[in-house]
Each structure stands twice: as structure tokens, then as C-alpha cells.
Amino acid sequence: MFKILVIDDDTVIRELLRRTLKRQGYDVSVASNGEEGIEKAQLLRPALIICDWIMPRLSGIEVCRQVKANPELSTTQFFLLTSLGSISDRVNGLDAGADDFISKPIEMNELYARVRAGLRLHQLSQDLQTQKQLLEAELAEAAEYVQSLLPEPTLTPLKIEAKFIPSRQLGGDCFDYCWLDSEYLSIYLMDTAGHGLRATLPSISVLNLLRSRTLPNIDYYQPSDVLKGLNSTFQMSYQNDKYFTIWYGVYNRVTRQLTYASAGHPPAILVSGREQNNLQVQRLKTPGMPVGMFLEAEYIDESCEIKNSSDLFIFSDGVYEIHLPDGSLWGLDAFIRLLTDSNRDPRASSHLDAIFNSIKTLNSGNPFEDDFSLLKIHFD
Image (cartoon, rainbow, N blue to C red; front, side, top):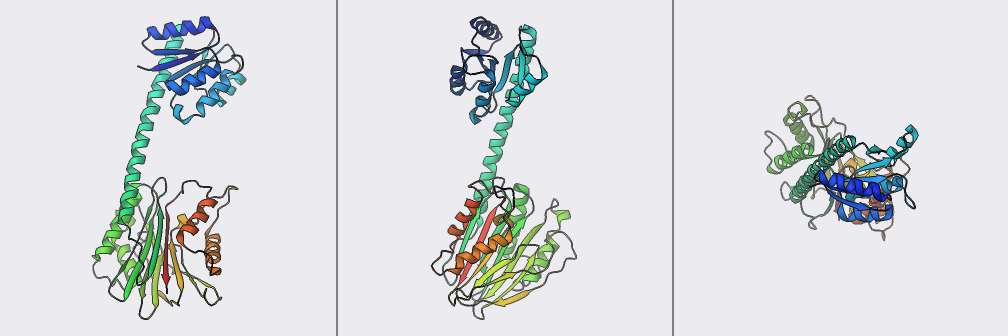
């Protein structure tokens, strides 16, 4: 049975509406002023509120604003009962959040029809809200599943940390690191275009494929060969138009050489020389189209020497594409400055939690619009 709340300071109209709507089969409650009406609305959470526009102390417009500002009453339909008929009056009512109007004197058949229409909208809003909650619960489960697939931090022989915060919609980020043998470590981070399960599922497929090393005729010690194999396997014309960017590196801990290749992905950042007070920042990136866009795409390798006490940061664009309160975009250069500042002072903390908290503050504590994925590899 639908609950209806009538708010009116006129005893006659209040009682008329209560009896009339009760005979229609509705559960009707009444309030004699705006303050009482707001209290009962919060307590009863009615499907529909019929409120007089002109009342002492608290007008129907103000009651409407307060009801519509309450998330717990988001599906409640709000009707203003009024003898005001000008266009400007109705515009003001709609701007305050009113869903409909009932004119005085009340015509009963019109009242019944409008109430039925309002209750249909309430039911539809509730159904949509339920579906939204179910979808959010499924996305939360998917995010937990993705997190369960990601590798654990490691301390030996390299210290590897990771920070992964899925966005509200869940993006397509995934990363991994594993030893190809006792000397060679593979590291990669990818980001599938889009959000939701359609972006997450391809990422999981790539993760499993790289972990199992089942790409045919691929040299997993050569990053460009890995990207070429992925590009041949995951063409977007066969993958629901999904493509992804990826940074892939292989580190030899004996020679301290890092070989890497990228496919449309942000550069990895190598920070070295902190202990010698000669801080150096390198952007590690090679040219290459995102995987899946063009079958004929070419990928190349680059390499560099890893000095003692260096940090390598690998990340997705969700780490630095932060919209600031003034509407501007924070950006990659600002993120690199943050990494540089966190490494410049030997006493400063460059741990991922500190970096993440700084970025979260910039984002005003809001949920991230995209997955936040950040890897840090410390080389002694």
C-alpha cells in the first residue's frame, strides 16, 4: 500500500484529502505545518507528498527544497497544492524540485489521475534505484575479484609496492610482476579503454594470458615481441571494439639493465641519484599505438641502466587526470613534480600511501573518475 503525506494548514482541505485518498486505498498521513510535515516525511518516507504552497512559517516551496535535498526521499514525488496559476509561479515550483501541481479548487478526478501518475513515477524511480544498487554491488564484487588477482607486495630481492583503487564504475586497469627466471623480472601495467565489466574482462584475459605465457611464438624477455603478440591476439574488431594501452618491461638484476616497450601508455618514471644529491628523472616510453587498434602496428624496445637506490614508477592515466576545484586538469607534469619532490629530500617519504594521500587531497576526497593504479619498484 502506497503511503501519502498531506501537508496543509487548512483543516478542511487536509481532512478532505485524507478521507478521499484513504477511500482510494492509500495509507494517508497528515501534517498541519511545514515543520511537522518534514519530520513525518523523514519518518514515514512516503511515496507521495501533497503540500500546500502558502503556509505560515515554512512555505510549500521551502518544504519541497528540504525534502528533495534528503537522499532518503529521492524517489518521493512532491505535489504542490496551489491557487497560483501564473507561469512564473510554476517555474519557481519546478525549480524548487516539485514534480507536479494540483490546482485549487480541487477537481477530484484530476486529483486521482495525478496521484496515480505520480505513484507510477515513484515506483519506476524505486525500480531504477534498486537496479542501480544491484549493478553497483556487482561492480564492487568485480573490483574485489580484480584486486584478488593482483600480485602481493614483495621485499626481496626487490622492493615492489602497488596501490590500486578502483573507480566507482570500475575501469580496465590491471598489472603484474613475476620472475621469468632467477635473473629476469617482467613488469607490466595495462589500461583498457572504457569502464565497467566490458573493460575489466579483457584486462583479466590479458593478465591470465601473460601469467601463463601461452602466447605462441613469443619471446617474453623481449617487450616489443610481447606487445606485438598481444596486438595480433586482441584486435578490437574481435574484442567488442576494446583496445588497451600497456607498459611492459624486463629487468635483469645481474646486469641491472631494464628493457621496455610501451603501447600508447603513459611513460614510466625512473628517479635516481637521490643519495648523491643529484636527482635525475627519466621518462621511459617508446612510440607505439595502443594494442588492438591496428594489426600492422610496430613496437620497439629501449633500455637503460638502473643505478643503485633508484625508484621506478609505473601507472595509468587515472593517477594524474584529476579535475581540480577550479575546473583545470592536474596532469602528468604535475604528477611527475610530486614524484620528484617526494624523492628530493632523503628524509621525505616517497611511499605510495603518502603519494596517494597527496593526490586524494587534490581530488577533494572524491571517488576517482578512473582506476588509480600505481606501481613502485625500488632498486637497492
